Length: 178
Image (cartoon, rainbow, N blue to C red; front, side):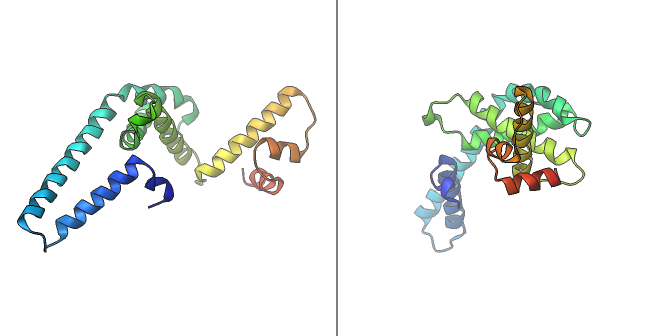
């Protein structure tokens, strides 16, 4: 498990699920321990059902973002494909959602839905797949270029690299590949 998953509720649930699976496979348990493991398995199954209920309560979020992001998908994907990706993002959001952080589920789910749809568009739109991190860097570089052009100022590559939060060497690499 990564350090981030050690601090989240989703990470704790995954560790609990693994411990229950390991206990269920243990042949040396007493009858009482087996009953407790069966109860824990039932509760975990019930919690998975609740994830579905939570995700289904926000299907409009997936619908909204799939329709909104279809413009950037080009001809690679249609609305139904984006909607399906959005529902996958909703499930991730439902599993990772922490109500104690005082954020509406629909707001939190929107972040996951957008990220999942964006990744699907990125994967489907190019013949050669590029990593999401690289595409994000390319996006920051284009944004820095556009902003400099809109201001009508002469900028150096170092200025663009600084605005895009990359090193000048990385900027040259992005321009070469992208």
